[in-house]
Image 1 (cartoon, rainbow, N blue to C red):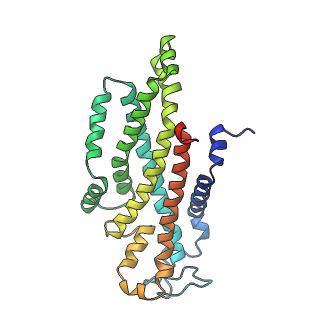
Image 2: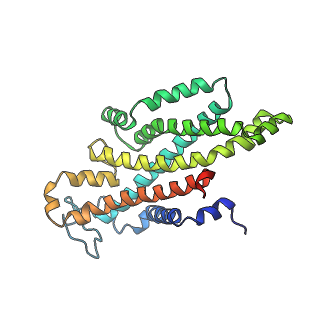
Image 3: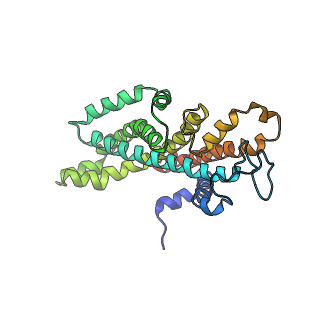
Length: 279
């Protein structure tokens, strides 16, 4: 079986492959969380118990197993980041493609994008989270609502550039229908930059969720990496003991590794989508 050309080019970038391997390993752990977790959610044990065979990451102040908390946090954080990024990228790609190809509505759509881009994203999300009940659905809506404008701007710019290429002009000159030119030529040329932005939006959603939880604006009933850090922040005394090494460090490292993996994947995809960066 012959592999796709883009995958062969992607494999030549060790950093991007390493990022994909890290993200894949975290995704597998999140997917297998119900089978990897040794205890049911809500099971309580001796508080602040050190790591052992029974509790690989110890327990927190309430007696919850932190390994189970970490696995459940992986499911929440990765699912939220992926779903918000996919939604924002899909909406942004559609708006940007239409704005770049259809000159009648393009300027109006771009002015709408400029309005969204002019507003600081994270402070506005913080303001909305302070008045709206936090939860998976509301966080997904927040990140998708403010994540599509950058995608639309980039896709629109690529569509405008591709419309001036010789192959697009030639296809229009021989009488090809506009819908065919849009679907078969221009839109596929704009998708690579949309994929690059998808990775960046997933990274932003994971970090923003952790930030909201750390500020106390997340869902207190949800188990995410950010909520684990927020819970530990209320006990400053743990940082003068060894408790932070099994309570704070695993979730912090997980967020850092996820963002690093996404950054490496984004660099690899950007190199593939931009011919000037391939050499």
